[in-house]
Length: 204
Image (cartoon, rainbow, N blue to C red; front, side):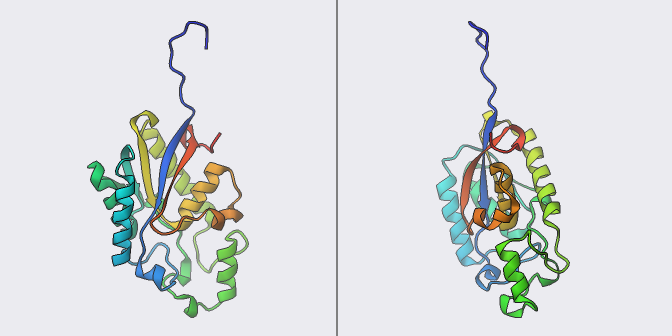
């Protein structure tokens, strides 16, 4: 910046609050939960209320959610104390797990395949499942659009979504390979504040 200039430097980073939804009965029953799945159970509602209490002092300007009920319910708790409306975006929906959605682990026709996929989703694919690359593309585009609508100077944006989607977003921010997805997964009803580049670019 030239000597004597009074211009304010433009920030090249911004923070987002990434939030995973509260517990559902399918989580507890260890069912394959993706683009389907139950609403939150009683424990999930209590978890979401606790999240709202933690986040009420965070200066949120907007709360976005996937269009799936368990995420929208969680987002409603987070948004309430800030008097914000929840904005849904189906591009933040969880990965579609294909033919195995809704099955418990004991009902899976090939548990070894599921175990390998859980350990490293880049090593194999589930029957009829949505490709990781497609999930990544839609989620990143959603985040680019969100970043474009909400200047960092106006406060943080909370994004309520799901295990695989949030892990892919974290890998993008941290510039990590997708085979590390499980390492970056958020637990149910948990959140992280992550610093990104401007426009949801990877962290500088």
